[in-house]
Every structure is written in C-alpha cells, then in structure tokens.
Image 1 (cartoon, one colour):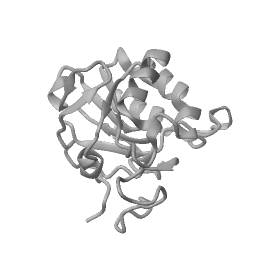
Image 2 (tube, rainbow, N blue to C red; image 1 turned 90 degrees about the vertical axis):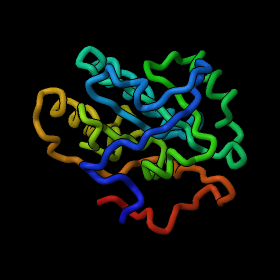
Image 3 (cartoon, rainbow, N blue to C red; image 1 turned 90 degrees about the horizontal axis):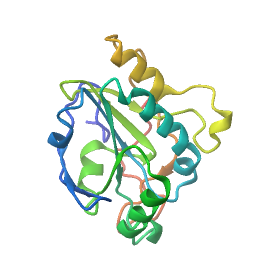
Image 4 (cartoon, rainbow, N blue to C red; image 1 turned 180 degrees about the vertical axis):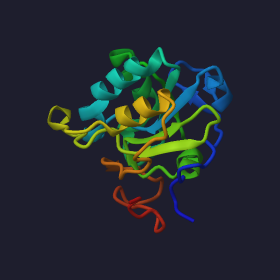
Length: 193
C-alpha cells in the first residue's frame, strides 16, 4: 500500500480548526460539487511562489462548484512560522479564496499521504480521488510554468470527462513532520509516478 491516496480512493474525513476559528469536516463542503484539498503552509517558497496561481484557479472554478480547502500540517516545532497564529495573520493579509485549516496532530496529512507543500488532491462529486500531485510544473517561479496540471484536471472534471493524467509528482518542500528532521519523509513515501 502506498503512503499517498491513490486515484479512486475516498476522501478521508477530518475535523480541523480554520483561521476563522470554526471547525470544518468533509460535510462542511457537502454543498460543493467538487472538492480540492491541498496541503500548504506559510513559508515554503514553492507555496509562496504559486499561491497566486492557486488563487486564480480557485476563482476560475468556484462558479462550477469547486471548493478549495488548504491544510497546514507542518510541525511548528520544526518551523515556528507555521503556527496557527501565523496562519491567521497570513489569511488576513492575503484573503485567499479557500478555508485554511490547521492539522496540529498531522493525522489528516497521514490519512491523505501528503508529501510536500503544496500537494493537491482533487475529489469528484462522490468524493473519490480523481487527481493528486502538483499544481503547476514550476511552483517556485510561477512565471516560468509551462503546464497547470491542477487547472487541466479541473477542466476535465467539470466538463464530465475522465481526468487524463490523474497522478503527478508534487513539487515543493517536504511536509515538516513533528519530531523528525526537516527533510525526513516516511519510508513508504517514494515518488508517486
């Protein structure tokens, strides 16, 4: 069994606190036709470099029933900038069009098999995984991107087509696992493709 959810898998549930002080679960997004869950953080240059592309993708697909949920699972022991307080400040500054959740226990990150920040998981109407991997091919320098895999997957999904490339390798910083070196990854977490 691979570390990361495989296409066809059901979305694992969660109950996590958002920067607005409310708790959210999968049911909180039940009115959305499709769901993008992505693991992100406050500081990673790959996140910071591609946040505006992610914003424009979220804005583009909102009217077609796609909700975006960002989850920060990074250990604040490893990286203090990833604390809940810093998340709140970041959302106040940038006003991103997604709910931003804190996964303190890292249980949700393990359930999804998050490898990097950012790492995207796209679910269809029955909350089955249809795409996982990178958002774009150059998240650190979004101006140099040549492909937006997330946009491509969502374009196919909302038009009722099967996602032609359901799996790509996420590009970014490692998830910062509590009690581990900043570059540590679980042994079973190898490249996806």
